[in-house]
Image 1: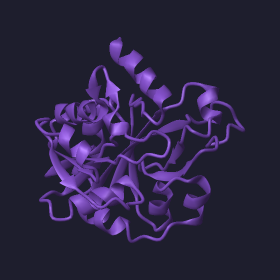
Image 2: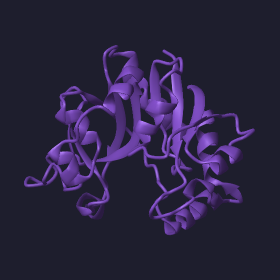
Image 3: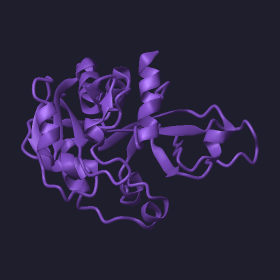
Image 4: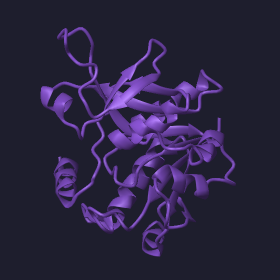
Length: 239
């Protein structure tokens, strides 16, 4: 199974412009993400970007760079353009704002593809340990079927603890892997009402009847959405 790790990275973030180039421990954040992706040792690493400044700092990093259009609505759309002609079977989408992602998580997200040759998509989750996380709308929750496939993702506390302790709540970890042909078809799927309500694009996949396999483990990843998140990541990296 030929795997590519794709890292979508755009300059124009509304909450944190230039985020991939923000310095973390003296190096651009995108270089930390590349290092983690390379450490996973699952295949080639390709940075998909619309900005020459980002491309320039990736030179000598060990990753390939693919220039894309600037008008993509999501990272998966950007990867679909970048990797359309790339020779691979599975694409892992590692966000360019995950400088502390565990290489073991990158390896784990592709494990289901080895056992399910027609699986279109996979992701990760880990148990929620605090009520604050369960109630936090910024912590996305997922409920699984007995096959380990996602039934639903929500910002609301699911499953609702009407009977406390009956089920373990799971936090979704936003690391995705796609079979390449599904990634190319994904951008053509129409958005769903639930997706628009929750602002969770993975609900589009479920709405159209596709399966998402979810591997559960200790996969706590910390994304950088704001300068405050960057300071938090710096403190964790220093440890």
